[in-house]
Image 1 (cartoon, chains in turn blue, red, brown):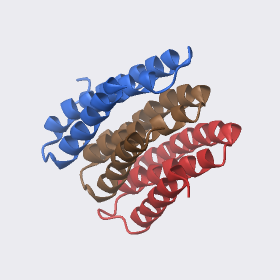
Image 2 (cartoon, chains in turn orange, brown, yellow; image 1 turned 180 degrees about the horizontal axis):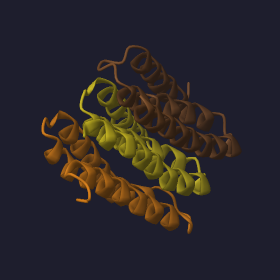
Image 3 (cartoon, chains in turn yellow, brown, red; image 1 turned 135 degrees about the vertical axis):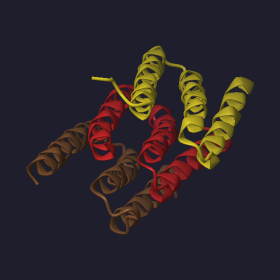
Image 4 (cartoon, helix red, strand yellow; image 1 turned 30 degrees about the vertical axis):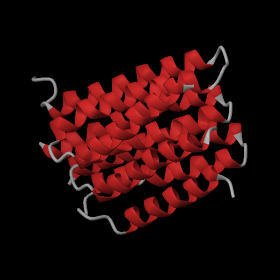
Length: 79
Length: 79
Length: 76
């Protein structure tokens, strides 16, 4: 039960820190921390076997989203 | 009242106001702001326990975003 | 859910919505939209709709990538 509170505290801190940051390049690591903390909270929140699949799907999806934003922000694929 | 219902209504109101009074009056900012009330409406649907409605709504929102993006690209190319 | 966790994730979702409405930069708006999704998703899992959670968490990045296609076009 204490792990859930720790993960929620990390998520709140990362969300506040990612919002008040001015530079876009510095926002992205805190958004990653928030995504990992929420993926940990999803698997601790409910005692169900399919909960692991939901957390893995959110992990894959949020990593894909962050990589797409970072790749486009850095200039995209040079052609 | 339920926490999910109140939170969904608040996010829906914030999203509708941000779409109506968008700050940089560009198409991209309005399109990104249009995604905010979709998540608020998803929370309101979640408060009424409508699982199939949420699935259909999320899929149709993604397809509608794709159609609007196609329309914007075609309009920028033609003009 | 426990009341403290509801407050925490509701605060994350609300902060994501407000910052996505107020930030003027396009990439900052998309990052704030990711924060909003991260705040909404524990409420879906807590009600027990795990299939809905899987679908939402796989479709939300696809919509973001669609928006990124037009954001890159506008910037250049």
